Image (cartoon, rainbow, N blue to C red; front, side, top):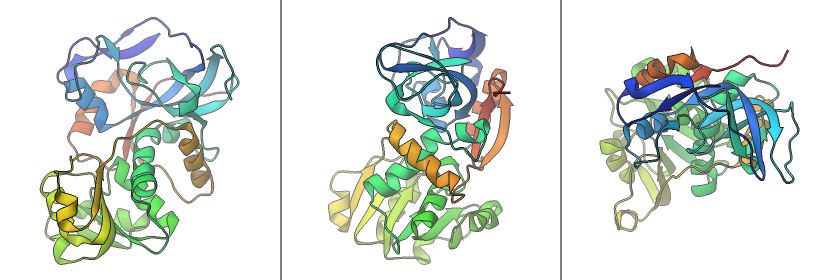
Length: 309
């Protein structure tokens, strides 16, 4: 089969589109014929070796949407031909014509959208869901500030928070202000000429996907007992206690049950994945260059195979 692998860590040029052996499902696993694969910032961080030195060569990619192709041994809640999506393990990879994944990490894809949009969901959608609801416990009527709201995680977070009934404030560059209002943000702050801490305060939750100075300035806009969740920054020891709030760094986990919940919300037409760039699997280098620029709105998706007739 065709896949995109790396044989060494480095820049986008280390991504190689090549022939590799097809994988076979083991106990409790399914094999997915991949139709589309999502691209995430974690992909190029792995490629650069920023998250640890892993065994090489390795197939890149964490998000897939496709069709169940075959089953491993044991009971699995899927059958060949079902349309599914999943966050796959680093060891297996998703930039490939086939991948295998533990069935507990898989869900039936949303019925109301296609494979390309479904492939944009798993990592970013789970990150937003787990940060807002599992960690911060965001509830109807609460207030949330979302940094980097036009990015992959941010666009889901804005929509999930709106769906929950929270008051949503978002930060973004000027080119994304109207877009964020269109997907549910109540207030949008242009970070290029406004300082969010001069405009808002007393927030129940802050979701930081930016880090650095943005993260450091976020403590002061939380109400006592509020929650700061970051997808990128480590929490300094004692910082939460100093500010009288709670804080946690998100480590996104694969979860088929939560993907099923997300599919239900999408099929209720409450949330829609934002895909702005579609490339072929062989264009993975270009996809990584775009993602690494950090100026993408929404998600990049690689088209891998053809869908069902």
